[in-house]
Amino acid sequence: MRALRRPRARATALAVTGVALILGGWQIVAVTAFTRANGSFGAIPPPGEVARRAVQDLADPGYWSGLSATASSALIGYAIAALAALILGVVVMLLPWLDDVVNNIGVIAACAPVAAISPIVVLLSPTGSRAVSITLAVLAVEFPMIVGVLLGLRAATSSQVDLVYAYGGSEWTAIRTVRIIAAVPSVIAALKIGAPAAFLGAMTGEFFAVGVDTGVGRLLLSQQYVGDYVGMWAIALLATLVSALGYAGVALVARLSAPWTSMTGGRR
Amino acid sequence: MDIDDGGSEMTDLPRKVRSVRIPRRAIISFLSAAATLILVLLLWQVIITTSTISTYQAKTPIDVWRYLFVDGAAKPVSAADRRADLVPIIAVTVFHAAVGLIFGVTAATVGAIVLSLSSTARAMFLPIALVLQTVPLIAMAPVIFAVFGSGVLTAAIVAAIVTFFPLMMNIRAGLSSASPETIELVHAYGGGRRRLLWHVQLPAALPSLFAGLKIAAPATVSAATLYEFLFSFEGLGANLLTSKSYSNYPLLWTLVAVTVALALAAYALAALVERLVLSHRYPPTRTHPSRRGGAS
Image (cartoon, rainbow over all chains, first blue to last red; front, top):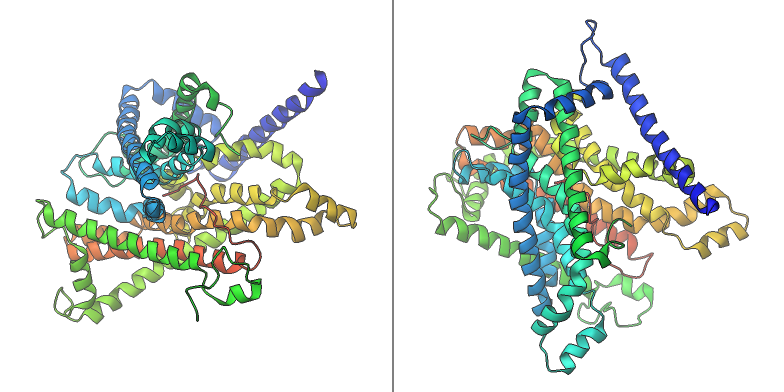
């Protein structure tokens, strides 16, 4: 028992040391290189200051509405991307020769530069619309979703699929009865990866949106205009935490609804 | 060159013969890429022509073609002049993205080697790296800009930072993918840590390095253009912004097409180099681009 526990305790201690080293280095750089003569903080403020500001921000309802505005755009994009990936996955199962084309669509979604897509989405959508945020969330999630769905739908063993065929079922029967269930673990893995990507995609979209004044992306840019560096880092910290919460939230839902997947799909 | 029966995966042709011919797999993936491209262009054309958006603002692939190749279709009368105006803009972005990719790959390789050599470093920094690789740092571009200020290389630094963590984790996974038997063989023949790294681990890491590169190369284009759009006056990103504010819509849509094409070309280049490098060393496996860390 003790022999089992000790390596784990050592790993935890080292991981904590790693975080402490990074925070320490950050503190030293912030204080020595980025503190102005009058004592105010420059482009890299010390970590304690950033954390204090993040906590302070959370007491401000403006930040909550910003976070929820971005999160709701992210959620819409996330849902669209997941649905599209499922439909495309089923299409590939029915028409296998479309495999490469569907994969290529995913690659295009992953490659398309945000600075190229956003201006035309803004151009084609009404002022004040959050369509850019939703679009960028979709693009950020689509490729991992497609890969996850295809991997999952193919995860059914050939004997399972053969059984469906032997009883006179079609590929569509196999998809409904066998493949969807087999796909759950890797779809969940893709959904986990997609959650942070969707949130930060939606946030990036707000850099381009016209007539939109809520959201963490807008907050980040407005603080950049006034040179509020502590505020910027606090927002970056909060955005990272929210996206991590998205990951954890999906993981929790997965564990409750499909407990057999909790051992799979995290990270290799 | 005989294409039809060359290099099919089923045949047991010797390696040397196969490497001369174009494998069928390459032809299929080329055809499917062309099909996807045509599909996307058709969708673009159909959406614009059927929608109610004014054709003054919304341009189709045909409009972009006319902007690039038809004299008199847009402001500088000669299409060659219009194309010539694009070249320096593209060159700036290519420079930013290429320098960013070189920085990113170098730093990621060094980081991955350090993590693979030292178990202490691994225990200390792997947990943090695991978290950070899932955070698309492109959303933090304003913070990176605040730290590095505006300069010739800031766009490249943004691109490097955005690609660093996903690349490093990919390379690290590859370095640790050598089989225990191979490692024992090196030890049995008296090989040290350095020989193991150079002759076993680095070659074993190539497939996952390329899997990472296929996402990182277009991601650097994306990061560089985002930086240019938000904070600078040069490159494709900045010109996307100015052409929109001057209501020069034919130019805007052309720049959109060029930027997306540049990112796809970066992907295709990484995939091509992968195929050239790996086809002689490994069974012809197709690596999937990294599943996480889509930085776009």
